[in-house]
Length: 202
Ligand SMILES: NC(=O)c1ccc[n+]([C@@H]2O[C@H](COP(=O)([O-])OP(=O)(O)OC[C@H]3O[C@@H](n4cnc5c(N)ncnc54)[C@H](OP(=O)(O)O)[C@@H]3O)[C@@H](O)[C@H]2O)c1
Image (cartoon, rainbow, N blue to C red):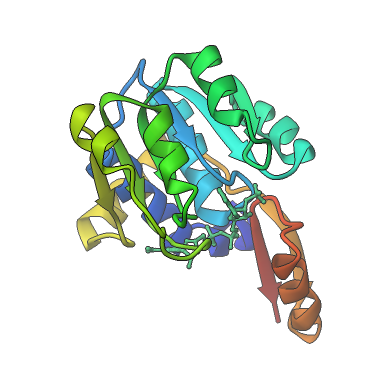
């Protein structure tokens, strides 16, 4: 890895690892949905899912990011701003065994709708805030598990490094900025233009 790639890996790579493998228990053949593929954690969750042999779908607000995700191995991409994306996802995949999400908010209820009976929804962030309601009936009727995940243990970190090396996973770098341009870097993140990690260098 370049220094920039190595700088992009630790926190996002660890968070994605624990969410997908420890909490989500994802395995080969599973239908996996990673939401908001432009995000730093999401790109690792997506690459790990492909490395496991799972069938990867992603969501995003931008078609260019969905297109780019295909080069990471995504079979399907859905624009979560389209009102019928839930129907599109169910028609294309039949539903998901594991869903990895960093947005939460009311869209969490869409994830409950696209989760297979017995499936697992793991969220590691709440970019969209707290949900105002929860489709509780769908959760219990379909025996869903909704779990939280944060970073990981020292053992998770060692396991993540071994997994990344074994599968030759390369962090997706969106753009590298010098410290002097840090404000532009934050503006890019605020506008949601990034696909992968933004790195600052001295
Ligand atoms: N628990 C932990 O250990 C941990 C670790 C790292 C980060 N986090 C949290 O996780 C969240 C994401 O952080 P990050 O650094 O990975 O991402 P990020 O680079 O800040 O990007 C956030 C992404 O959220 C996506 N998004 C926005 N609205 C969405 C929605 N309604 N549904 C699905 N996706 C949506 C966007 O994806 P598109 O651009 O593709 O539309 C955007 O790229 C933040 O809340 C952060 O605080 C938690």
